[in-house]
Image 1 (cartoon, rainbow, N blue to C red):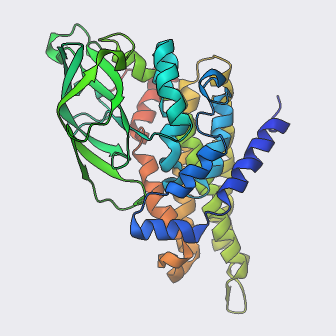
Image 2: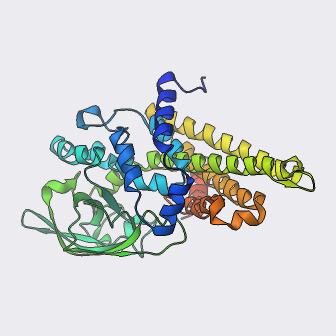
Image 3: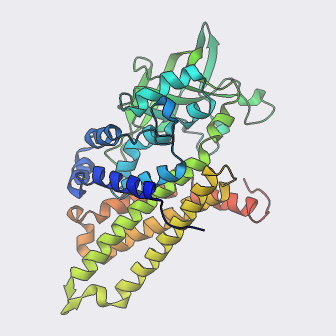
Length: 386
């Protein structure tokens, strides 16, 4: 059992770290203030070939595993969740196309996204359908040469800048389906702003990456933009869920480790009553506890990634990694604010940004409560509770 990164994986880590170096705390503070999308950062990641890291080389990707994707996202995560959110869908978001697309679709859809020539967004969540995805009502009606889509989505990230949308719809009403998971269809199609109205949602954090409500009015979608078979969209959607949990965990761990380092550095430098505050156990012990928890989350992360890349079941491990990472990252950021005292409340010390962003990990892409339900059922054999 080898816990060390391979030489190639260490090279990936170092390469991504060099890309991230110019985009320091000051850059992300400015983006948090002005809300401007970090185009320069996303372009640098694309230019250096990290978009599509898990996509086969035949379509412009690197053909590597989810372990390598986790290494990339953990390193980017050190910059904060605005950084990871700005590149997430380009790095990993089109797994449904990789898994279920035709050869023609892969050749047409994947290279522009991987090259950074196109940006995409993901339309799945609705005002009345969050984790209960089967209750979506956005509907794709059959029409000449394709479909006409009507409905609305919410919390659609990067829709202000998107050229394409990965869109989850119903093609059969829920009431007419034998199973709730039937009758759903996925499309990857042009983001037609004449047919899609975008309204940005003001939020407490991650201002640099827009979140939106979108309103779809008679969007025409050609049949060749359908991913997989009609009515089997839920299966398409499930394809990337465990990998998404792993990538989300990696992002949270990177952010947690970075903000913990800020806290430890400040504790070693700040003198009160003639000595560093880091000499006090009330400061030391919480930071040491969080360091251990982040290490535990990272071990679970790479166990889940190893299982995924080996083709083995990894649902429990992927969800556990996400849960452990979210909790440890939040506590790291909160403790960093407290370690800084009054200065932790000041934006110029940057830890409050990590704190605000870390709250999102409890909610997306899956809540910790649903993870606990999953573990209770799958690991402990308890009755399904939802």
